[in-house]
Length: 220
Image 1: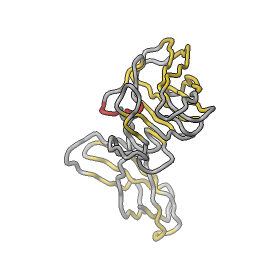
Image 2 (image 1 turned 135 degrees about the vertical axis):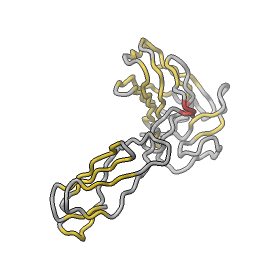
Image 3 (image 1 turned 90 degrees about the vertical axis):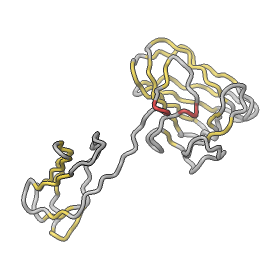
Image 4 (image 1 turned 60 degrees about the vertical axis):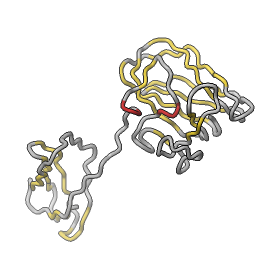
């Protein structure tokens, strides 16, 4: 939180012997006109007692406080990326929270299974395999999965259920659009079928992020 009647002021932030950031202090128009200046994506790796230094690099800066707000970081669920080729369970989307690892349009889990403490709607599955599935997958919602990927030609098989027509799932891998899968009306939310997106070419290798997005509402 800073104020200054001068231009081009700066504050240098250091943690022990490591420079974290240099903050440009704007001319706020008056020594009593305060503004909050934000420096984004500062990484701190030390896990120990350290000394923070705030140093003025120019004269004429009023300094009130500095606040560190932890940013949610996307990571694989349980710490281990999925593998492609391989099967990915819907409920094992990445950690990181809303807008980072998933997007969900309603607060809380509609099924309240207690499996994961997020807004994604997870229930005990009625399918012949697996423990849980994602339901109430609504238009525009998405889930992301970190995966170690081998390039090649793939068929993407997806286990789905819905009582609605003209529903789709869109698949992207980092910046590559893999395709859009038509989800058939299976006649019941517990009547599951395997739909296949055929002949998908994956060009990338190494750790990537797979996104599955609902096109149309009402998909399990």
